[in-house]
Image (cartoon, rainbow, N blue to C red):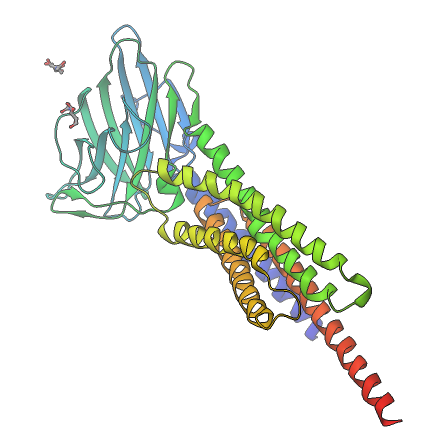
Length: 384
Ligand SMILES: *[C@@H]1O[C@H](CO)[C@@H](O)[C@H](O)[C@H]1NC(C)=O
Ligand SMILES: *[C@@H]1O[C@H](CO)[C@@H](O)[C@H](O)[C@H]1NC(C)=O
């Protein structure tokens, strides 16, 4: 009886999950995908590309003789009372300098499009843009906004840098700042009007970000904790002396070297990322570098084993060492969040940390049992 109930319950759960999944897929498709958007017959476009962020798509026809681009940009705004925007940036990569069209509910309630020459991050002002814009119109239906327009491009401009965005609110006819999630920061790339191809921008930056992430996750996030585990637990075994010391020092120095490489790439990325600052990630990174460097150089100042200051040095060494390990792991998680990598990478790192934690816990138990046994043996022999 109970068993039957269990089966039924599980079946119902799977059914609900499947429904949820289907509706999510359906929503994404309805929101902005190329295949799902049907335009009236007076608005037909020769090409379409699904854009990689914000469930959006760009539909267009390019007249190379007249150098005019007719397009429709379709995206769900962050909130129904928000806005959607599509822009060409003729000079740079990203928001600054972009010649933007923004669609939103105008103060009178109707949907409309206005043009913005974006010159700063702080605020935007409506005004003329570099490209003569005509046939501007917008619609809002089925949770998505459609932004229509026609732009006169300079002759020969057939590959454009595009930037698109969605926002959640408009105040007094002024679109308000968008969010700063990875989707908001990476919604840019190039669009080839003739070939119909899109590609994300910042290719070399993305490679650098990944290299920075891998180097730092492996060094600060994995090697240094392993080095600490070696020192703490191998030391208990007399036969491992002094091997544990050399293993520990090698592991930490290699980890530190790799970590400094990753850190330098991170600083370079930070200096290039204008307007967007990941303050916490950056500050933790700088603290890590300072503490790590201190730790390496303090090795040369280590008093000999029976020096009266050795005890103090040891306390210092543990404190700084454990701080570096905790901050290192925290910062790897911060970085994973910023990169908005696939869930599987974050999961992989969580598993790696859990395994290291498990090993440490196991060895902690073993160490204590060894120590207690030794004590026992000693007090036993004393008694006899
Ligand atoms: C847009 O702003 C830039 C920088 O202020 C300026 O040089 C450019 O002429 C402006 N474009 C238009 C169409 O006003
Ligand atoms: C923009 O287009 C309008 C209408 O086609 C035209 O009258 C105007 O001269 C154009 N402006 C520029 C700067 O090309």
